Image 1: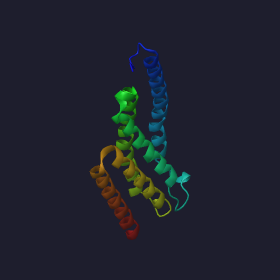
Image 2: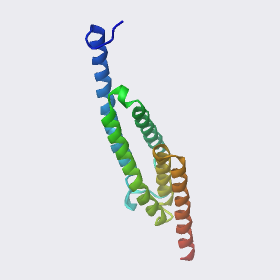
Image 3: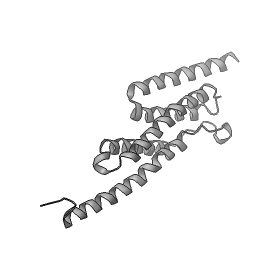
Image 4: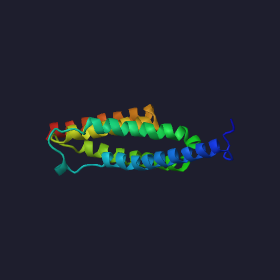
Length: 158
């Protein structure tokens, strides 16, 4: 069976590939924005005492990051090279800059918002494990532990 673009089957396959590419590209385009919104540092007034970031949102965002990574692996076959590379670069930038801000917020957290700040950093660590690898995520986790330890010492001295 000839599946080249010059046959009816080939044209159908090319049309189907184009539709799949458009659907995937539309979904992939939205993922960095969703992760960015979840990573956004919250002001204290938006945080309820002892609350935590929604674990379902974290799990969904983590799965979406995995989706981008899977699509990136097969981007040329799926005709989505540009969109996957752009989404991956945006995720890298968001996580690289966002985690520093979240760790600083954790370091300066008081008793009322520390649980939320810690859960926020934990989410960032999970995302970074997907994008940058487990070694990078382990370093972030250690930085978060140091930040919590420093905050607790500061409270104990006061």
